[in-house]
Length: 467
Image (cartoon, rainbow, N blue to C red; front, side, top):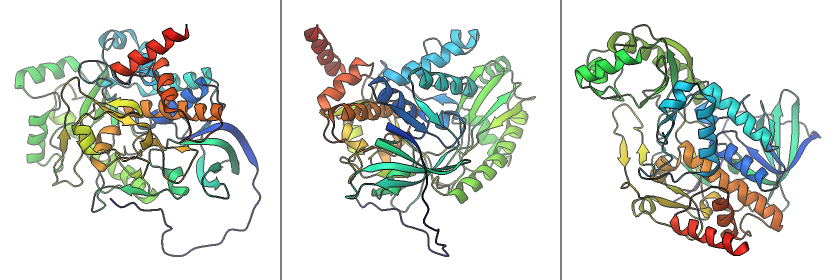
């Protein structure tokens, strides 16, 4: 297994003049990225005593769930019990309570495929970070990293925003960008995509209003079609109303009886680390949404008068970089439901690899109900850097397992572990590899995470002994 390092693009270049830039912020822990992993990390670090600054390039939190309008949270369970608990589950439940009465009633006990109300979720995240004393800096892009003389530590980051360029000093850094942007700037080796560089496609998700859910349900009952409209989509493709590719809708998430989130179709050849690709993805994605809207209005009863409320600000990205960490989680680990002494989370979401082109095939690999595998602490630790954690879809794994780890509940869990570890490292005056991992696991369980029945029992025994 070989790993790459980020290199500059060939072509013309310019030399910038040397410049002193101001230090605008300082914090014990700087979290870069405001998606699920960054939110989990920031709250966890603050809960455990660290001063925290979260830097986000957009004007709101939420990552794929708000930026790209991914319509629902994937499962928090192993089909028998909740296994992603802690901060992530608490925030998801808080969103439910902030929605209207009909939503609360319908989804009260739902833990798998929980529809996202994006505007409500943005406010929930804002409030949660504020309550824990996390400072946020929106509309800011990371321009560079500041490394120690020996290259083993990141001492800060350089950001660019409307104010200009400034430095942010940090004792510890959490790269929650989803693309390992900070790790790549620091020279951490990584992999990207498959053996031939192929990447899973992006998806332009969107919200439709003025739909009639009851009429839609009657259509499904009368025709026997699935909720993902397999038969209807295949008929539309055969008649030229939809392009070749995905043969069904990935998912409909009903926020209420007249508003639905849609994940449908693919935009191919998008590298989420390249601005040109993201630009093309946005344009092609919006064109595809226009075509899909006409499909819904023409082919799907209940959607005759559907109105497009919003499409994602960015095409949803499934994979980019995967760091080389102290351990690389593998498909074999997944298939064997393997546990590790340093587990910091459990995962049961199936391996879900989307086709790289319109003629390809999707791959799904499931665990049995009740099964899950461990996510070891070491996958968060990029080689060569002693104060950096990389939770989320860019964590250290092979490509197959990345297709399982990448979903938002898992990102919450890895983020919570990273933030807790950073605060523990600060408390113990050490680096990411010097912390007491049993103490990290104890804190995670004490603060709501689930690491398996044995870990829960051990934490309970330790708590009783302390009393």
